[in-house]
Every structure is written in C-alpha cells, then in structure tokens.
Length: 309
Image (cartoon, rainbow, N blue to C red; front, side, top):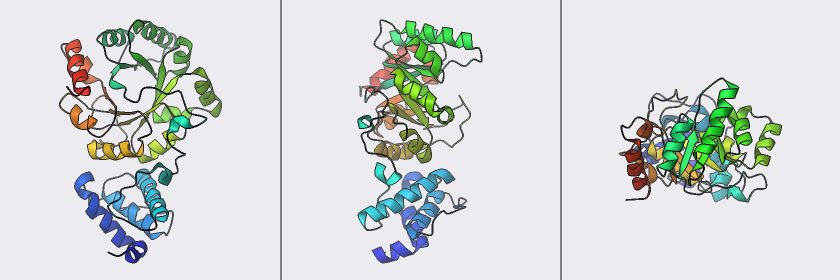
C-alpha cells in the first residue's frame, strides 16, 4: 500500500491497522465504530480498526484522533506505528513533573503496592516491608473514616512505607498522609477549587484509569502517578471496562512513560512477571495478600518478584 492510497482510503487504512496489530490486541468481528467526528480518512480508518481490535467507543475515538495527529506530524501513514507520542493525544509537554501545576513527585518505581481494607492491615503490611500501601476503607460514616485514616497514618509511622488514602481526600489532608488515590469518577467530581486545595496540601496524587480516554483526562491534572487496569479479571469490584490485558498495558506504559505507573487488577505471583515486563514500575495487589494464609510470606514472595529475584 503506498502512502497516497493509505491517506485517502479509510477502509484500506482500517484493514492495514488490524492486520498489523490483531495478533497483539486480539480481534472481534462484532465491533464497528458507530460514529465519526471527522471525514479525515486516517481518522475514520483508525477508528474502524480500533473498534475491531476491541477498544470501546471513547478509546477508539481517542486513538483515531491520535493516529491522525501522528500522520500529520510525520507526513505519512504507517500502519505498524501504534500511537505513543503524548503530543499526538493532546497532552501537554512531558515529563509531567516539569509542569507548573504538577502534583508533588513520588518514586518512579513504587514497587509492590498493597491495597488494604483497614488501618490494621496497613500497619501489618508496612511492617512486613511493603514499600507502598493504600488504605481503601469503605464507610459512609465520616467519623469512622477520619478515625481509620488517622490510624493508618499512625500505623506506618516508623516504617519506610508510603501511605496513600483511597478517596477520602479531606481526611487524608487532615491526617497529613503521604498521598491520595482517586478513581476517575472521584477526580471528575472535584471542583476547580477543590482540586486546587488538593494541590496546595502537598499530597501526592494517584489516579486510576481504564483506557486511553481516561489516561488523557488524568494527565490533564498532572498527578504524581497513574494506575492502569484492570489488567486481568477481578472479582473485587464491578469494572466498567473489560480486562485490559498486558498488550494494552504495554501500550499504555509507553504513552505514559513520563509518569510513575502502577498496573492493577487480578495480579498474583504467577502473573506479576509479565505485568512488570510491560515497563510499569509498580504492581498493585489486593487478594494476593489479604486472602493468603500467611500474608507476610506472600509479601516477601511478591517483593522478591518485583526486585527480579
């Protein structure tokens, strides 16, 4: 296929992209792009292809626009060149830490990242040597939340563990936690004034993402790290998107290479090496620790894998 044909025939573009990437991402014959925001052939062909490759509508749209930007920037269409330049996705200059509005930095490699249900578990796993822990405490009782967040901050005192609080940002600020982790919906719900309050607090911010569109939205606030998943099927929570798989995780990691990155969702000891091989600097686990008969031994095994032992 010559460059002129590729630039003008959206069907040929779609077929070329699918042929180049189906072995990596998989292919579904039932998916078709349902709407288009441009008549540009590269955009339309790329969106058709990304739908066939299993990407949901918003991610196919995001990728199609990036493919068009990549083609305009390079001067030619190349089916094998999966977009991974932040500028082609409309992101601001990398590394994000150089931006004026960037949240404080955290380590590039957060290592084993334990997501835990209460302060007692946080303290236990911090004492076991896990470098990054998150309190994911679910309650509608504001006083109980405040108590648990403060208890978690106390529980990691004297250890080297970095503590992130899931969701409860006001309590995290009040307790002077190391950082905060927000889901995409929680981030979107913050007003500009609330987001500025978070920045001014000095908290590190991590954000969950489940695909390209959410990664672009997360990048807009220049967080400290970005989590990507769910990599594998998980029974812990209802996911809005299908498992991403390591092929997509690797593509995400290349796009977000200016960020500390966390792979999360259904990861256990057997799967951890292939997750780390994508280039992420951290792997988050839940059941692999809390459901193990000997969590300290499980922590030691998982940390050894993270360290390549």
